[in-house]
Length: 206
Image 1 (cartoon, rainbow, N blue to C red):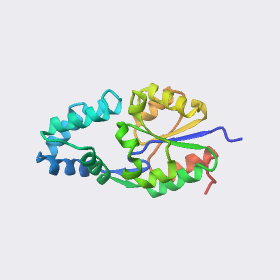
Image 2 (cartoon, rainbow, N blue to C red; image 1 turned 90 degrees about the horizontal axis):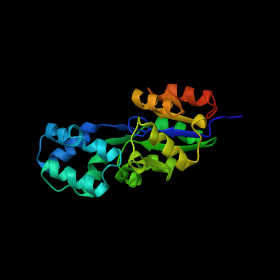
Image 3 (tube, rainbow, N blue to C red; image 1 turned 90 degrees about the vertical axis):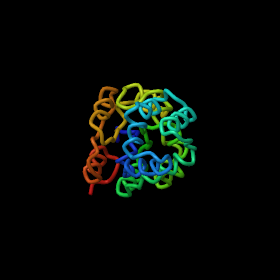
């Protein structure tokens, strides 16, 4: 009997290719700031980390982003820049869709809720496979690799850690998942992921 009841996927650089430089470029053009200034304002300031952990609301996050960049950043502007940086990883999405025939599937991404609530716009290919089961870390008031984000997400999904396979490209997040009791696969490409899913009985072996 298959012991994995939930396959939980990271989003950026797993289910989709994420080019942060394209997002930065869009915001630089919008604000008139240099790309370096944009990167400093969003990431080096700690704002993005606060948003990922749910320490600020989406409205507060957009306001603070605009304040740091010296211009108003609307939700439409932000989403447009985020969308430009994302392109679907079709090979991985195909594997996730196949796994859905044998277990529950969901997404846990380090992001503010503006991402999960607009996933149909940002990446409709992800939305078509996962439906409403795309969760931003901010919804759980914690961000990977904090063990609490895994525990709260699994509670939401009514899943048990030892029956969950978590897939992420970042070693720190894999370590956090392990501490929370999840089975974890360090994503390096769709071929090794296919092997891991097959080993877990979630897809047919090639």
